[in-house]
Length: 537
Ligand SMILES: [Zn+2]
Image (cartoon, rainbow, N blue to C red):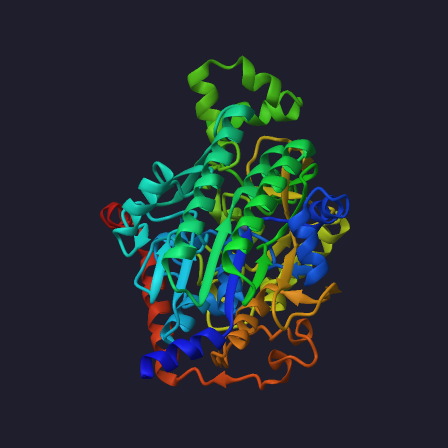
């Protein structure tokens, strides 16, 4: 009897399907939908609510997905970008090797006794126990389980002919991660469609297998193709049409009593103007190099002569690979920085994070905290804004317990500056590049019972997704969440609009647990000896 009652309750409770499309942008979807090229998107836009979803600053995949799924800003998570700075050294390490993913909407829904399926979410770097199932996402940990339950892996392998997590291979090392590009457009596209098809098959399989309350899957393909082939709009259009068909199939499967939400972690645009930030720091005398190593010398000479791409082709294969591999990932150690004369530096990787070489924080700090630090930051902001580079102080955009770990200044990519490159060797402050890069406006779309129709939402932010999901699912929202419930998406007379927004206190015990976790994280960041590194990989 009780079981029947529960079943009946469950039928009436809202179910939510989230389809994440990494890097998807209305700039492309909207005109194609209007032209009738993306019928499913068109149907969802006309029958639901859609609008921009403002990402994090900067709009990188990490921390954007983390913030979306926690409803918290990076200052509360200690996750600012892919790399974590070790406070007692100049070494950066991939943060995701060190931590369990932060407590997210998945965990909160699961703890409330509901069934959760989480498939290929980029912030999930290994699968852990949840009330339902989980498949790890991009940058998965090579020695951790990829699925929960673990035996799910072989089921996915058999239905897809060998499951694949992502479109790009990534080699994760203790101090960096390398993306291994697939040579040639045709091979890349073949890989892209193969992985996408497998993801769609796995999603359909899991939608049937579990009696889920909350289901989330992320397709990373839009990000991958837009990075690589931004100029080739025909190929991108074809791929969106493919995604459109997949979404149609998924919608057919779930029936009418599910609220479907489409999200992207950031938008996309051209990458024709790249800011070579280290070149600028060198020119301003803020970053001093002792001498350049051989690789950097070659790069710099070729760069200054405008011959890099030509010269690269003339180099013997092995040397070309060696030099080429370092182009966008130059190690600070390789650049042989004279720390005794360096006031400002950046991490390798080009994440737009700027650090002041501060006395008492950095091992060879030379800038006094307080007035000197503030004056230097103000000066950098003023000078960069003259160049059209948008830059923020950390406390302007982040708040929370972990703000000490944040970069001192953060450069934003936007329609003026499309990318940031920390490498030296270009010989100029700005350079041209191909392909696409991230923008701040991602996509938001909601469709289903109780959701307005044909309504365009403004001011939706990435932090609003978690509280909105929890409100729909009748799970109290933790009171330390930074986002808000997007109440304007609900039909005025609907239950969703009328019911009270419930919050729960984040108990002191949990706050302490978070703090301890933070300390452990900090300790991990300090450890740089090779034995420990091996364990981590
Ligand atoms: Zn992304």
